[in-house]
Image 1 (tube, rainbow, N blue to C red):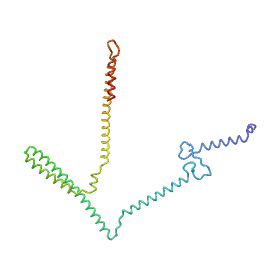
Image 2: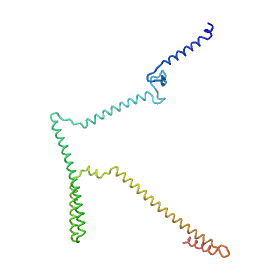
Image 3: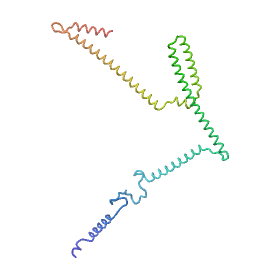
Length: 261
């Protein structure tokens, strides 16, 4: 009995509380956690209804504002799409619908046939031009072996052929859209031209650099040669081993005359 009353009741209470918490945590399981590890949660004070604030960064009011803005943009997009659909919609009266539809099909067919005719005419014109080019080339080779008179007559026929091909080319109908398309350069052509211009600039720059380098080297070579000649002239000595003052005076005189000129 003496062993039971050795420790105070507060100590026993602490032990029991510790034991109860250990047992609870041991048998506690969480969904989605196989190892029984408790997932960390962000601590939020009890007086706060929403997460975050303006001071803490993206607050609840800002979130609600963004949500309202997003919903408003969605409504605007829906309205815009519905208006665009209504713009391109054609409504016909029921008792005349078949007539309108037949007229529309007829116009489409006419446009398609006109387009095909234009392409066929263009292809025929290209074939004719190729044939005429071959004929003119053959005639030129034949007339090279003949006399001058025959050559003159063949030149007249060539000019007539060229005029006929030019008139055929002008008579072929080409739409403005096709003309613009033919005149307009593709992105590949633009990039190719830019690349070629860059290469040309680099080539010119390199040539200029090499030319300047050669001129500079030649000038340095001439300067060194002149210096060496003057040094050899001034370093000449007399028979007794003394410097030749006559040569030095002559050199100074030439220098003075050069500055005066």
